[in-house]
Length: 332
Ligand code: AMP
Ligand code: TRP
Image (cartoon, rainbow, N blue to C red; front, side, top):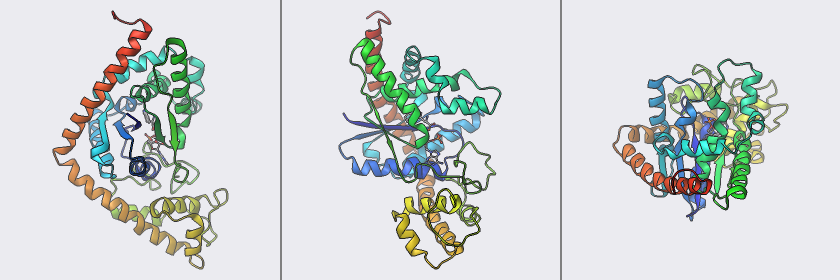
């Protein structure tokens, strides 16, 4: 079985960045890679690497599972599950830690950033999380892992660990490859376009579009996005980060290239461009929200998650016993 796998942490409400950088791409890949099966999971064990409010976390997990479905993934070819319900993830995560060096984890940008900001309370789970992420992927022999650009370092580590394990204990894991979207891989904050749009931001942040924001709020956020004092719509990431970010959003949703967008808005000001973009995003996210509202109150979501857990558990159990056997863990 050929598998494409990816996960998202249920921390906060997913953003337009998650949608354009990850979710929309999963759907596109699913349509194109017809001989692959898609495994998507809610990375709830990763969420607790930073403190979570239990009530909010439970809600975020359900919301994220429903958002996966609402984004248009085809249920027939999708195995959707919660990471915490397949215990082999944590077990293989432990195995991965046993072949990961401290220096490798210390080099991870995400960890370094937190340490550089001198944030207090950086947990050991945050430090070791790349080993758990490697386990998430290797457990299923996933061939391709679609992620945003910020995850490529973790994917490199996963590949190193797969090769290391195979060399030490014999052929066991498929060495996975990252699939990074070119356009949309990095959607920036609308108020601070040099910073990534992130769901861990303050929910009151006007620069971040949450997928479950009311549609009028989404339109307002786009219309009040920070832009420069020039008036011409053209792509220049260095000098016009605000407009370039909006053009990226426009391009990913409509499929138009930057050149085509530039031609379309030649002679128009930012106001027209932003107004059109607000409508385009509202239409896309409005449709997603309609599907979301149906799914979240239906019984189907739990049924899909139950089936996903069964299927994932079966494969995960098989792989983990192979791993234990090769390493000499347990009795057989
Ligand atoms: P996270 O929000 O960090 O759990 O990321 C979930 C997925 O969304 C990952 O594949 C990220 O690379 C992707 N992602 C998160 N934020 C953005 C963003 N601002 N632009 C593009 N992709 C993003
Ligand atoms: N670390 C990823 C993120 O922060 C989420 C994730 C966890 C993931 N496990 C994964 C993504 C396995 C792809 C494959 O976005």
